[in-house]
Length: 90
Image (cartoon, rainbow, N blue to C red; front, top):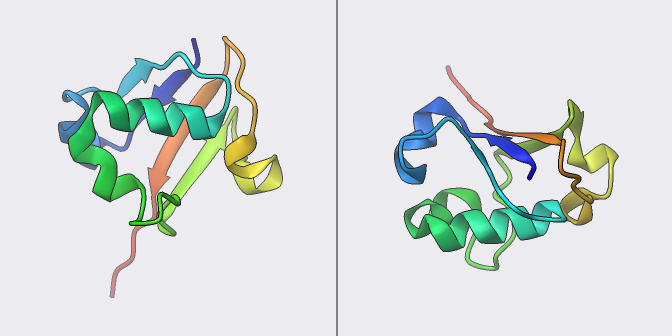
């Protein structure tokens, strides 16, 4: 199963885990399964239309999904997925 690394600031919403495996064949399915298992994380990951929030970046094996097939990016058993929330300051 692909291994997902979650932002430390948000691990509270996913059972206090920074890393866990999700059985999924695409990034979209992975996000859906994370939300199904941890419903309180939904509003932090997706907007009211179900689209990934703008400030979230997803990397599969170090490559941003926008440089792959976006949410339709296929996942393999050995893949490592990093969800990263953008930070802003001022």
